[in-house]
Image 1 (cartoon, protein in one colour):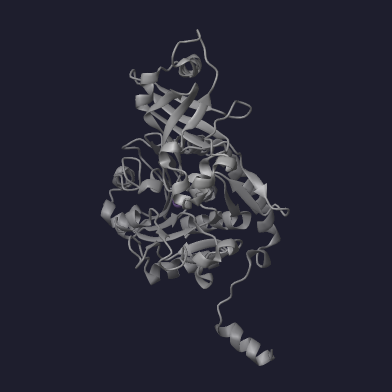
Image 2: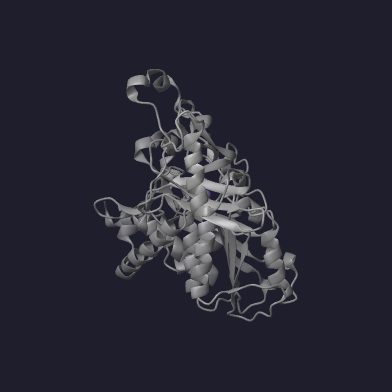
Length: 463
Ligand code: MN
Ligand code: MN
């Protein structure tokens, strides 16, 4: 190539370089340290409740105090509030008035899983099982024949809440069984989505009977006795329980080069943790920084702990009240990074991606101007000016980023909390970590992209 052509191209062409060709030594070291902390957060939080609890512990260690309505707040103050044990909102008060807007990072801490039905326990053929109802978009065939844990809460009539953790560490795990190939001929002819019906996702709990031969439900009784011994609960208490089956696998590095992380629940704890660690690390910001960790994104952000809940507005309204600012004025001047994962280009399934507009592993935090399906249906299509603002902020902070769509037009689609923030009159842009095998019991992300998402969140808070 002639020198002249090279200069002409350099002047006009957009550059897309692998993050490893751009990252500096300092960031490389920081990336490894950050990813160790992230893996610890993942391993301690396999449910939204556990993530919320761990978030509060970490926040308190860093000087955040529980917010109380009417509290006097000054620049630099750090507060948090927990919504019903499943969602957390944190804020660092800025030196500017909230009338000039808040800088928000919103992610979600719920993840696809199997919930127990309200009447879950039964015995069949002298084996005890739990009936499940899947939560979020799962590919059912991926949830059979893998070790599972049971986690969650049982709320008793007297108001106490029992936290359940079964199958952790060396404890016995649980499993959903599948057909052996020898007898699977008919099942194998079915489409992938139909081969494992939802009503067969029954969790094997035990096989050892108690009591006298000839009695019925002896294995079920044994299971209830075990649960009663450990938690003091009886069968009727399942009525007011939220028990979740989650993969037992712990996070680990992936690849001979250790460049990736495999784990359950990257979607969206990988962005939630980025937003959280970033709000811990900012020095006194100008705009009030808000980290929103929402629940229920995987089922449409509905309900009292989802992003559509007024809980967020209430928290922001309270903060605004402390400065005599109107909430609507704060919102119209705020910016929100809707931090949620996107699909990483997978050469194994190239046919569903449009290569020129796909997020790639190691190319940094992936911005998505819009999500949605078909003709952008259900998308919060960020304004060009909003994207330009984020480009500038990320470039100024030397954050490695890329811009992408989820997949080919008409191949499918997805959504995030972005539209619910944008509907509040908050300028919002989607951005997050590209994920391989998204929504599988074991998802893969790149360390570089995790770290760049953290850096991106920090840059947004500090902008
Ligand atoms: Mn997500
Ligand atoms: Mn998801």
